[in-house]
Image (cartoon, rainbow, N blue to C red; front, side, top):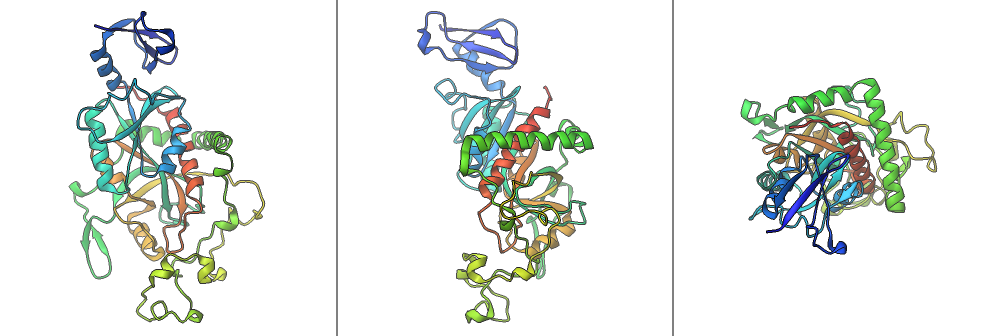
Length: 386
């Protein structure tokens, strides 16, 4: 039977092919540090399965592209194809980020249901995973006095210190009232995660984290070139929450101009320029006020707080602010509550819009890049061992 030899390395160990293998066919797998040991092929696969400690969950291809670009080592070859257990329908990418062996889960669709299924399969195949990071893009809650987060701009990054399933409850004529019993509320992060988050919120560590995010973001810019660029302060527009994205009176649209508040399908898919959204209804932004249209990139800032998670895309400024005031959340996303059922989770997502009816996709690539940069900066600080 084939024998694999594990050898110590500074950051881990490598598993090599038997000595009689051709030199050109040799493959190596980076694993957590261990003393000299031998495995047959079956036990080697089992060891590798138990060596992975961090799962990264992405819902969009642009999110996975940014995350994979920051891997320090890629293992997507024949040495990893047999690691998932039989019946696991997930698609994975394997690799190393710093000291951590990680697995990236590719999801075909957004939503809590898809995330729950993906996380359940991953947990069965890789029981040693102790942390799941949900990395990608989200809708941000700007100027939220309830949470102390002020002047959030597009491209900033959200790190969750708790998750709120905001659309799980009872529908009343004026609102959805979320259930608040013990079984309906996502718990706070476990101690290892909560303690790290507390550390990162301190002045010096927050400064260091923001600097590392900028460092890794520059790496992505060098890698992707013009595909990842700061879209510019002139494209970061926050309208008053009550100002709807719809046809104006001059358009004579019978639906948008009706007093019942309905918006036509054409308006929903049109840009602000096409609809003539009034620039006088924009909210002034302190961080953006000194930037010209051709100025250098505004560096992203990391914000910590509760994240609202649900199966629907938030596209209403009024509903956004109402839920944010009630639940004290700083962002909206669509996967965390599903994954939380299986793993301790941290949401790390870049703000690509303001979760209102004026949202567009201009900022998605850049926000995915800032989130991936923050993901790597976070893992540099994550030292938990089982």
